[in-house]
Length: 137
Image (cartoon, rainbow, N blue to C red; front, side):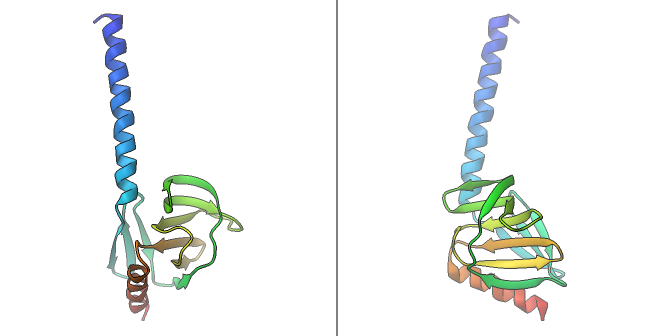
């Protein structure tokens, strides 16, 4: 194969990979995560999947402001934040599944692990919160 053909094929592959990445990110951020509660664990089914042990966890609703300081592995567009971040005044990384940044969220703390979750509407967030409290009882 000629050098020119190799360059063209390489350029096309790079373009396709780049387009695929942008499409994946756009779709990922527009789809709300799915939640499953199984054996005292909250399973977040999303690009940044995680399992949260609820056994000894503290669960509360909060509207305290979150000040993100660093994205470890995650995506952020508009008011949506997903993945692992660091936030001001917290020593360890935290997990975010925030569909509406700056609005009320569910805060789950289990040992030194912290999780911040809200859904597309306040009603959906409250419904998930109530399901989590029922698991704790």
